Length: 116
Image (cartoon, rainbow, N blue to C red; front, side, top):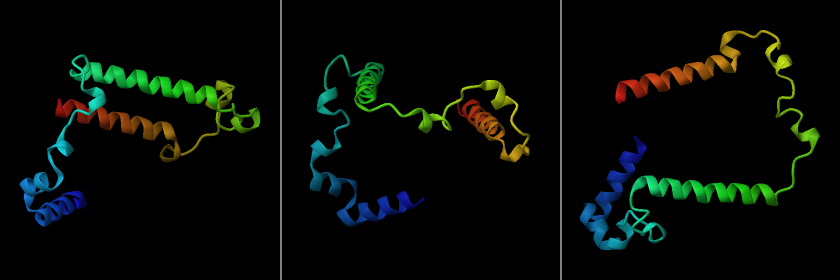
């Protein structure tokens, strides 16, 4: 709601959408960046695949550059024995992350189904 109010107030200050165009220039309103301005990258699927490749390359590069975490640091962040995880103490349903995960997935699925 605040975004709508701020946008409306800002557009009034500069004289509406046309005033914003005059003050900033048309180059500020281009949706395709120069890097992506290639005929193969115009369809959105090609752009998504290109972005996936770039992000994957960055992920691998950063993973190779950074030092691995010690075993002591990973002791509380990784699962080494699934049986002990499943045999954990019982907690009320509202404190169990699986309940909230299931609720979130159910709500997202219902919203997707309603809006498709």
